[in-house]
Image 1 (tube, rainbow, N blue to C red):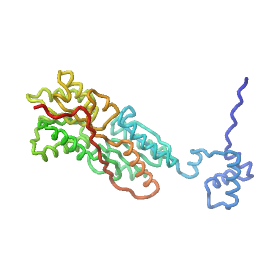
Image 2 (tube, helix red, strand yellow):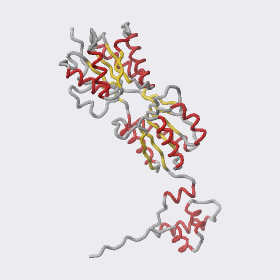
Image 3 (tube, rainbow, N blue to C red):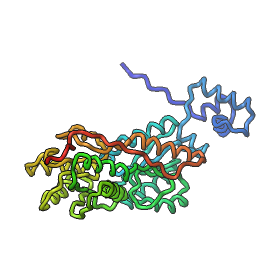
Image 4 (cartoon, rainbow, N blue to C red):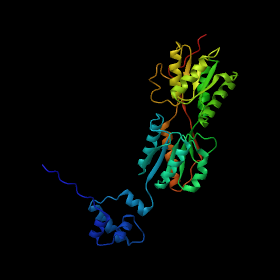
Length: 341
């Protein structure tokens, strides 16, 4: 049995022929142009509706100079942090009729800038960048591209005009204080050696908690991995090699904590029996580790929503807060426990 061919969608040319007007008149009528007589506009729009005409977003963009598209730059779509952030962005974008283009920067500043320029060339109306390695450089890029840009968890030191940031210092202070409240006095910070702003702020929060508890800051208890499990494993091995190992470790992120957890187990020690561990992010696997990981939860989807809300205001010509600081939440699970005496 032969399949029926699908009917060809109507074009503006078809509507022009049915209405007995020019193509340009149809284009103007479908965009509610004030240059046309109102009765003509309503007649052409009625013909289009009754004929089942659906405007092409591309064609409409050529007329209105609006593409209804947003560009989103992420470090990598494989990063477990990214999916919920993008979900929040897409939710807000779709609610307002915007499509989302996604591209990876792979944490490479040069690539990040190239992707942003590429998005601008594609005439996106706004751009969101997660974990930017360029940061304040966008102040110069903004004047060049004339496209609103919002950063999420900017990793470059210094303020950027529009950004959404987790409250790193206070969240890290709370995490470290949690270990102190469990009786730990020898607490390490396992950071990220890449020099990101978030690492500096989390170290600051760690030091603040020690200071508030009148505990000394010991440089040998600060080690750095690379934000990934392998780096966390190596940094943890350094801590275990000290003459006196820490009894509590606050990690830069959950990925580092995952490597640290493995290192502790492979050295015949137990978490939390010998060492209590805390991560940061509350990624999907945090509740499935053995033991389940105490960590700081970033409201990733909400951060994506907030970034998109800022962008929508900027694209409509409105003003928005310079930087939104989002509070985090300490999620206490089984990897932290009172220090054994």
